[in-house]
Image (tube, rainbow, N blue to C red; front, side):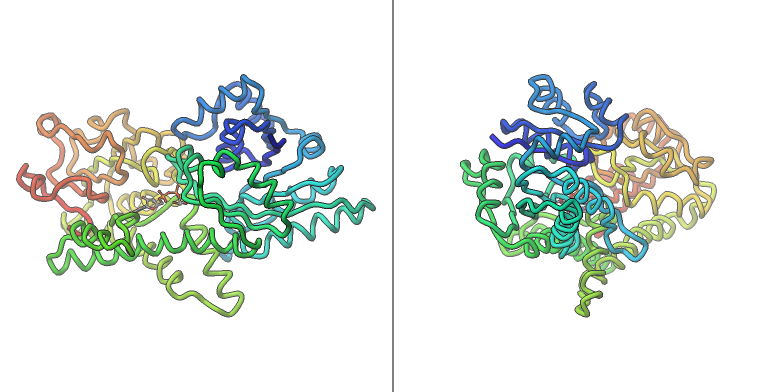
Length: 440
Ligand code: UDX
């Protein structure tokens, strides 16, 4: 079993470290945030991810999973070091590499023998080589010439199903430059390898590109169906039937063809921008990705237009808002459509009553600017009581079975904007709602 350090205990680092320890390895998770490390030692997980807490607790107790702020000893005592720190977007859309490179520098500063340095953060093509140079230069300054390998091993974890995605991946992508590195990575993922998970072995640049191209393609697929949905509304077609029948063509597949208020989250918005930037910088702009980014911004605004057009005005109206996170089963609100749609409604004079099962952590500060027109509610029914309209923004399971009889007694609005198409239009119209979905 390999001895592995994972630097960065954010979403990707923590999930990777915890599950690799579950695979039987001894893992040291490193972070500069002392409070976060103390919390993790006490079983307090900084993110909401179903199933993760149990895995962390179990492996921390059996000592296969350790938490520390001491990067020096983590580098000295481990053979494989994962870099899983953030790559936030810089002002021009490019990914900011300062954290990745500074970890590279630390690794070189404390390196005491052969190491495999694995990049798990999503980074622009060419970053692996930059990390390699950083390590080589730093070693040079120390007067050492240790052998090391750089590996690109992108993750394809979806928030909310990260545990399942890590343990049952469609494929594992390994970009490396030596057989030794490929062999060590197979050892790291031995549990998956022996279970016949496909392994893609390639060079570092290809592995880096696979991640960006995959995310950009998925973002484009969602945007495609969103734009088709907008046309469906105008021509009397039903986008759900369209998507279903399209998806039955195996070349298309039904996944990521659900029309909605636009994609959000920590990956698609950031990665599409970064790939567009990379493509522009090398003189080969990818117009489809640029159009995707613009169309996704438009889609969020269109949701507001839909509501205003239906109701005539939103001035003085009260809305029961169900969901603010960018998707269900996460507390993450990064680039969530709610962050555009809700402030816009308030700007037009609306008042909001909001409920989200996990949105209470980030919601209040992310929506601080509109706090005087926004009331946080404890339950679905609190949020929709005495309102003019309901807006369903995130498809949490608990919103799928609303009790319509109960709603009548609570004086909920007759307008129902189902921006995730989780209800059937005919049934909702039958029940007396003025129902609006996306493309139905
Ligand atoms: C995504 C990728 O799926 C994952 O492989 C990558 O590593 C990180 O980015 P994540 O951001 O967690 O994962 O969420 P995902 O489930 O992919 O959804 C992204 C966004 O697209 C959400 O806002 C979601 O609501 C939206 N979406 C998704 C749609 O609007 N329609 C769909 O059909 C699918």
